[in-house]
Image (cartoon, rainbow, N blue to C red; front, top):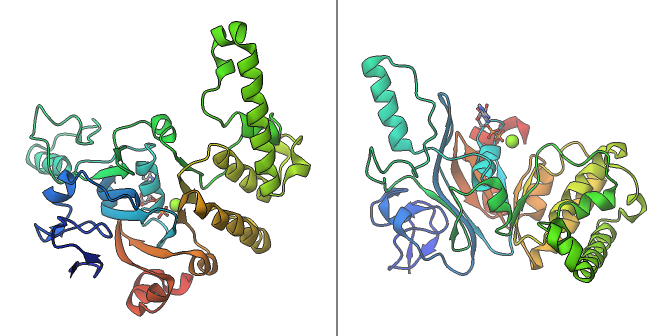
Length: 333
Ligand SMILES: Nc1ncnc2c1ncn2[C@@H]1O[C@H](COP(=O)(O)OP(=O)(O)O)[C@@H](O)[C@H]1O
Ligand SMILES: [Mg+2]
């Protein structure tokens, strides 16, 4: 066993990159070829997101972000506003396509040479064969051993990874119970042939789903509002409903973007206790501003600044990292 020179994680001599921070042990840099080529992810890893870049016309929101999330843990992602946390979730879950940094560099060079307007075509490494060799340092997102970058958000959701949003969305005219039921992936009744020929199967499935939805309402202690419609709910109830809509799909990886925002601390702690219970079945990747929550509940904390991870460790290690606290988290925390 040796230590990773970047994050001090213990790695095997035979490893080509550090599973904790993405450091390339062969090339001595983050995100070089061994990282890209490595195809066997250890059983214990839920999500590996290595060397991700995302640019919004000049704004470098992500600049080589690498995170590795271990199964059945609660990992928190913290950092100043605008540091790229939500963008990282968007790339992981297929809502945004990552950029290929090599192509971006070439574009900038070209622009400087010719003063042509910037191309609007999307670059994510998939469409590069004709003009460039497939670059080795474009990074990847893997959920367990499945490469998910390049999938649509809908496809990613079917792999067993689910997210909530910073702002809660629901169906305003449906009841709480119905909101849970429509969150389930494709159901037998949606197929017109099934409606005619397989009524019994549909009824059984509906019964099973309703029971599951009722169990979730009970777990979240919102059974009493099951017949209220979405638009009547309070902020806290919306948060719980969003969590319920996610749980009904039994995700193996749950990404939560500021689940505590806008709700009172008592309810916040209650939600966190519920989330902790999920660790037996799922892995939790959490973006959260409330530092009490982060330091009390996390197994590991990742600190993001300017589009990359600048520190990681258990809550004690991060709390003692005065350099990081002062430079990046400052008075906010
Ligand atoms: N859709 C977008 N279009 C343009 N710029 C964006 C978009 N989303 C995020 N950004 C920019 O990317 C940077 C990172 O944003 P974000 O990921 O939302 O940060 P965080 O979640 O850490 O507060 C910010 O400078 C933000 O303004
Ligand atoms: Mg955000």
